[in-house]
Picture 1 (cartoon, rainbow, N blue to C red):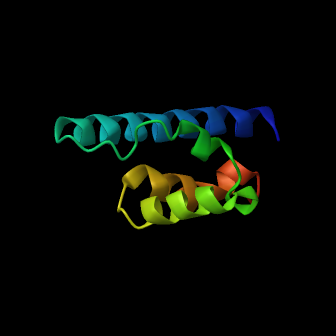
Picture 2 (cartoon, one colour):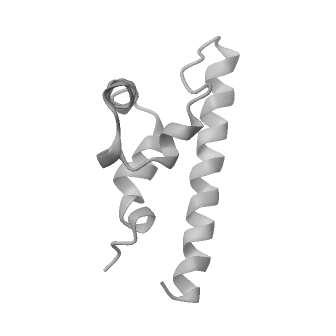
Length: 84
């Protein structure tokens, strides 16, 4: 990965983190603890999930959260290093 790619990846990761934090704050205002204590889940490759992680991830995947789209839909190739 070139220095330019690392620089872009740093900004993309920061953007995803900001969206995640904003959504978490919005959910907590309404008493929804959906995103509480799940940071470790985002550090793992979904291909390596155990059964419990798959179940938890599947429930979150269909929750409509924006940062999940950024991680696994919109920015997924950047995150995995498969950018063409």
